[in-house]
Image 1 (cartoon, rainbow, N blue to C red):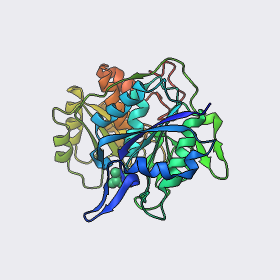
Image 2: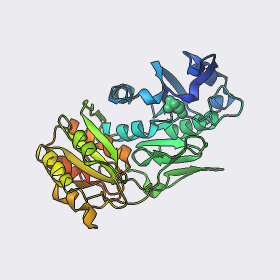
Image 3: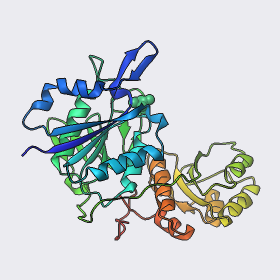
Image 4: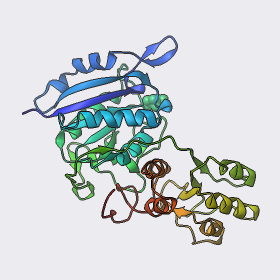
Length: 343
Ligand code: ASP
């Protein structure tokens, strides 16, 4: 029997057409184009249903509302399909992939996000290959997690980042090897793929929490951080220097951080380096963060850390529990053994 894949088309460059105002999505275009792909009629290809969202979005406009819509759609169609493909703009694809990793609790089937740098309407494009291979991976059943396929590589969703705005290998997973490489064959890295859970799927809807992500740079003024840390902020991802350092010559910063922490603001420290860990406490320049009870985000991407914070806040956990779980491995988002409960 043919495998069945549910395609969710959210928008993005992949399905855009030329208009007199520049590239823009067009209703019905994706379905019409896919119907003309002879490759999709091959025996080895799955049957598919395409669900076009309204409105089709440039992914810069994605938010928790759309993440929930996608997750609920997957939940509703979960038993009818073998896998899911999400066609998405590249700009925030790594955020949506990370968010879905947390939101889709108990996921046991492939969910593959893809898009393209050049739209399908152009003669030379990367959309066609990305769609065909994403469909094969979604039908293949080897992976049982949220992942992102682009430019010949399959990445774990919560490890992926957009690394290039204009080359066709637009994504990377700097702290984790690809789950698969699609060359002559699609070579799966079996040892890295998540094991099936058989617990049933459940969507944890994210709430609209006030959180922030800030990148530290030389000369950043304490007032900037002070303003960001004011109520109603619930949590902040600090993209710190190197292994988690910040400029500490202005001693007022210590009280700014401590006051925020006492109000229950969760401070998570990631590195702004593309590769490697943040681990506060190694250098004196991170001691203000240690003293304020900040948590190290280890080798999480800022995308994973921000969506994980949404997830843990949405679970309704206490500040202390959130801080503990921030540095546990829940979905493969950081390099530690998996948390036994994989909540
Ligand atoms: N701005 C577009 C978007 O993210 C770019 C793309 O689709 O690749 O929707």
